[in-house]
Image (cartoon, rainbow, N blue to C red; front, side, top):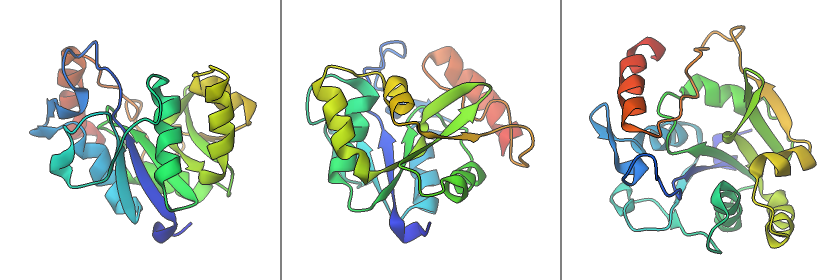
Length: 198
């Protein structure tokens, strides 16, 4: 899969209730949290867009895609973004995983096998906001959403998404690669861990 065949999508449309502020704008290591997935995706993809429902990310000078319908969480964010993507393959990252490495993304790209969805799988759990989604899934996303089903994991099980195991057999592995930064405490934890993951 070539860089020109990939669009990067950062999902930043959540409510950030536990953080108490717009999560993607929280300072992390001297810059807004959202800058980390944006930087990783710019390395791997020909274009990058942000799924958000505000103008808070205009400073990044990237397309900001609003949810097509209110509510629906990440399901809605991915569907809305796929509708706006110009490429068949789309590399999706959450805005709150600043420890993701470029090597991990390259491993996902190399392992996707042309599947409709290929998702990182870590310690027995799916990481649905670290994966590759084909634009051909747009209609299936829409049908799932129109039926009032918004659980992304349930959707991925239904379509039998390809699971890409991320474990200590990989040279770039670190057990905290997928750390989600949802609270001020996790911001400090992530900043302390960042040096050991580089």
